[in-house]
Length: 240
Ligand SMILES: Nc1ncnc2c1ncn2[C@@H]1O[C@H](COP(=O)(O)OP(=O)(O)OP(=O)(O)O)[C@@H](O)[C@H]1O
Image 1 (cartoon, helix red, strand yellow):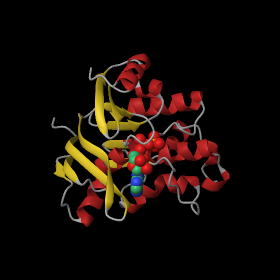
Image 2 (spheres, helix red, strand yellow):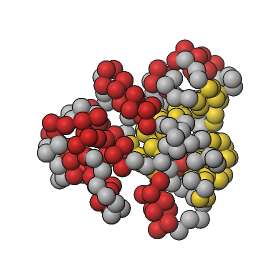
Image 3 (tube, rainbow, N blue to C red):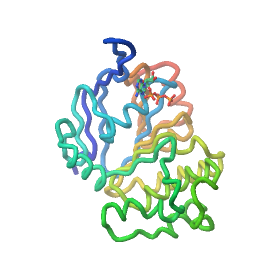
């Protein structure tokens, strides 16, 4: 099977001052096979979220090439890009991005409603993240960790080929975070893949492959590495 995601030489800069830009991604290559879970780690500000947003087509890269499910993102008309994102991927945002006016169960059902697809098993998805009893509540009445789990249930219920998750365990205690990682780990199989950005090196070690970023560049790429091995690469920046 062709890679689900293939990116080469991805660059991105942000404007800082009048006419000045600062490079945030400096030529990054990423390849993701069907069934694979990839983690991206790196110090704060190294470009992890920016890379994830570019790979998911939520931010336009300045240079390089990104293909998602065989479609090149550069130059794709906005409507086609939106359709590709809707049909192919799910994104777990660091800030959850739940709709405050809708009850939890409607938040989970929303992607299917927007795509005019058959409704997923919303109750089952909420049960998977331990929130079956919260289906009727509004997101604002839940804790940050509970909202994070609703965001994860929403993405997993929609069943996309590719899940991008930006710090999905950041707001969770270690037990609940472990359960969420189990779900993501279990999700990455067959034709479905997961890309995870995390600060937590033990979480990163659950992935099949890990890339370590520093200052917008990949300084190490490891396969089946332990948390300790990822830490060594993180600290040493050695390409394994
Ligand atoms: N929209 C933006 N405009 C300007 N600069 C930005 C923007 N988004 C990110 N940056 C800058 O790009 C750099 C990388 O940010 P990014 O959020 O990708 O890093 P990160 O590795 O995900 O960090 P963290 O672990 O703290 O979330 C940072 O210096 C950040 O300030």
